[in-house]
Image (cartoon, rainbow, N blue to C red; front, side, top):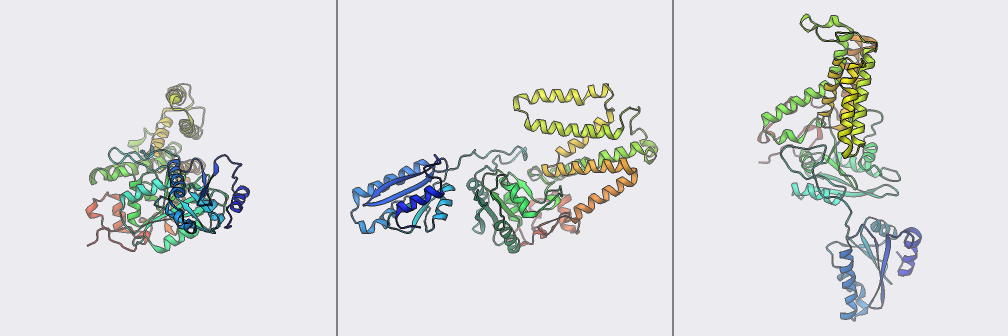
Length: 481
């Protein structure tokens, strides 16, 4: 950093777009015959704080006369709880573009950064994808400061850490790694931080999704290797279990890692009800997820090989022949459901009702009446689609849909052997998948009886006193004596 503020000013013009970008500015003051410059980005700063600081600095000329102590006097008038010295212009520029202000004093080689950030964004509200009947209605926002505060409000522990770093050569996006120091595995924390520091890319325009692709190196495996949540209570619960969370600025969701398949089929609603009701909800959800993968291929297998059906189930299958092959009908109906899902996402809310009526007409009774589909195809495709919608993780539901289509193709090509081989490969893929060296099917493979019991039954909180061993927690007990 130069000792002359006009040289610093010139550097900011050349490297920081000052006087070119309208939102990057500087306020120049003369305090005790010393030039003082305040650099800021309009829209990321709280203007009220800047005005108060400028007002305090201007008053120095009316009440102070010791010019030799100008630096100490000016520092003392920076009325804010977070004032930090800064020595390098590159760091100062990153600080300014992050929403802080930088105060530089003539004839000094050290400036001050003041955290007056006020990012634009919405207030915490309940996430659309993780609604509950009873429970908190707050959710993460696009502001990393608010998101960490929502979790710290639930865990008032001095060992809760949020270590922040900047990722992206150009975007310099704030990314925070959250964990509880005396619970989380230090090796896991180090791996996550090392992977984040090794990210080399221009920017994180897709925020946490870009982080995920660098972190777990998923390739073309469709199954989610990290869990996303927009609920602070869910993130806090995983922190207490020993997981590590990654919070990315501009994203309303956080990444939970490491995770297994069973983390993606949990929902907060199970823990807002009694253990018996929570267990019932969990079993219904498991049935729906299994149906979303295997029901349609199994029904199609019985259609192409009716001899596999016992006598009392011979009614299964179409009673009339159609000109369109059954596998083509299934694919058309299944892809039609996907069209509806995409249309529902992109259709403006006022038009969604009209879109639903059109969809009901096209894929409903009219399609059956003209002979495009047999009624049973619509029935089983609808049940499979409902199973997809019952899957809490959107990413897992889409992966299961892809698995279902591949199973259908295998049954169409090889009949019963195709179903057996396809289902076996599906399970083998899940069993061989690892997320940050964590087995994807734990506690089923490798088998852990006590943990598997907790997956099948919703355990009451007094009885749930052991943290999951898969995350290697330092403190295994949830209820210290």
